[in-house]
Length: 459
Image 1 (cartoon, rainbow, N blue to C red):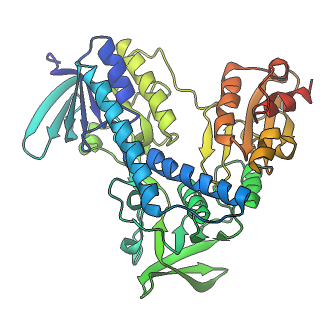
Image 2 (cartoon, rainbow, N blue to C red; image 1 turned 90 degrees about the vertical axis):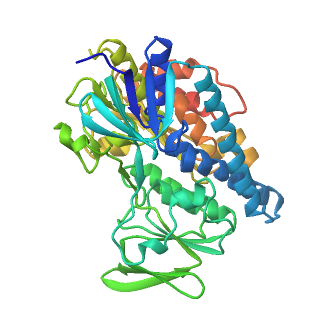
């Protein structure tokens, strides 16, 4: 091919793109990043994990304050939005400084579409520019999935709750959430903590499908009992009422409905496939662009990272995939680095939180592996930190390979679950054993000491 205008073009500037761009720039490559937002961070920063978790932290503090003091007084919702906005602004400024320190990287606020396997057209709304690149990283992310349902336009989405200039600016008295996945249950959890009456309508028999069933059962028992969960509810329509909305659904073969001030659509997200990609004769489907462990598509110089590949839609996964792609680009598209999904922490930022990593007991029983596991647990009712915060429900469950006692996975529900799962994940990735964990003198009084405590029960 002729000399490229850029060594690398990224379609998107979120976690699946900018870590690679910055790494490649340090190696001297010229990188063009295209993104309609015109900023680093993708949907995670614009409307996803950062703003939602910023709001969740406030809700968790409100809940803790009420439990310890008996005072249910909360905080004005406008102040929660202001806190979210401040966190987003801080991180956007941080990314601007990163870009300023990487002169080899150019970011254009624009859409990009494929012309051929080495050419994209960048459209910034003013003009169009054809760009040739030696390597292309597709990191266009995913968007809110809104079904073809009568009245679906009456529902709020995660963008309306957590985005910049959100549509929802006052705490609603009541909320019905369509979808029992991570976004739906997390949203239900912290709005309930703020005092909103919440109903979840989930299509299946179990919320949080795909997660460890034992962990989900433990979490569900610890969620705010005021949250109403209706399983096997097939939503058929949404209509406006004088007070808000009415959501119609089928349950046990009979029509039913529930009313609330607002409805939230949280049934999932769909990959954003760049325009023109379908003409490249590269595999993709409704789940995303097909890639191998090197993040390569059927064309070795075209990579797909982050939510667009449908493998595991988490920001930290996108970052690692992005770096895998950058290392393989530096190796001239010869795979030298690979993505490992076996030790990725997955956290539900509910109140309380729940998290899992690696191979768990329920997954092994369901046939996900032939490995025989030995389980050991630590109950938070015995934990000093949990007793201090009042979060004495749940605990740590670790799963070791029978015989050599190598740690294969674990889950945590309750105090500091979102922090502990990273420590367990490192141990899984490093191949540590129960002997290794038992010897480590984790600090007291922190919930992390429960990891070595559980391991000591086996050795």
